[in-house]
Image (tube, rainbow, N blue to C red):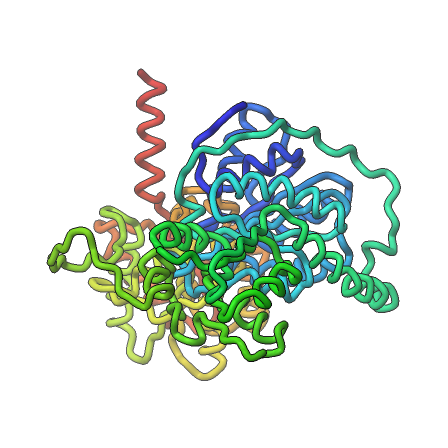
Length: 537
């Protein structure tokens, strides 16, 4: 018996490895990044799994689907908003089905620690009519991932594995099972299975819907869905990491409520019905959207018994859950702190690292804006540089989603804005910035795009970037940007005046121009210098 101390993310990764995956595909995104990085580290020793960063989440999903097509097991991992990018192939993969087992590991972010929203990925699984597994601890993250591959191949469907930040980034001991061998490659593939021509797709979609009752039966028999009948006044339905908060409070209660722990979706309907028939009231405790709560109100035909949860105010509608919220929901009382400390600490807003190249870029950009006579609007993107919206820079106005800086900038130019500027990182440009730039180049849109090339995907830990350095210039030329209006600057204090002048000139140019601010991230530079020093010693 082998026990390893693993993050929730790492437990999913190890579960996939021990389930016999042949490939892992991902684009960096907190809180899911460590899933791929664990596979990447493991593979440096084993060299048995294809593990290379993909251009974006859609590409990662499609690469994993291609591996599944060949009968091999594959893992694709991303954060919740990454599934928005991969939604097209994800939704359609439910209709094509899979060959080898295909698991999509997702990191949801309740409380928005590093995300634009609190999106709940369970809704996507319901939308696509596929399985979703939701572990409550690191051991379940490992065990359910292994089960997910078996389930994927049993039903010939992709399976979604949902983690939340608190589970993804906490550690616990995990007991490992014997690893499985990788699948053999397929040599005979039915073309009708994979071609979503309407005549084929209509039949396959009907088959998918006919599978739903079988999935509910599977959930009712799954050992990870636990029903315990205690006091019959209140029944609690709890899922995922919220189960830990519930059990912490449960042990302190004199009267123990009955409860059902849910770890699989579609839900175990028979177990839900049994609990409902047994108790007077139902309370739903779930991390994320009130999805189970909404489902039960429909599934149980809004019967005479009360269903308590987020909609009734018993559970907060936004943010992360914790034991205190659960205690108040179950007892109606505020939990008294063990120690009362009245400390008013100053806020510590996030900031760019000391010596960050983005800081010098923004200082030059602000100077250029002052030199231009007219309205300048700066649209930004997802990355460390989004902090440019805060003091002391106050340099950017928008941040919506990956690649939106260039699209929104073009839309503003089309609306008549004279000096539109887009700010995007090198990795984000490779992810989803190239597509809108093609249109701007074809139209000759009067706008300025600034690509902050720090040679890495810095915000998520310094992963490899596909569009950086000289290849980035070649990509821009290939997209149709005129070479004389691709400017490269080095954002350093000594170059401030010259950089501001170049920015001003390109803003005033009546056409498309791109400025590349080329300087390595200070964090990756420190690591590379430290590595060189150790090698020299």
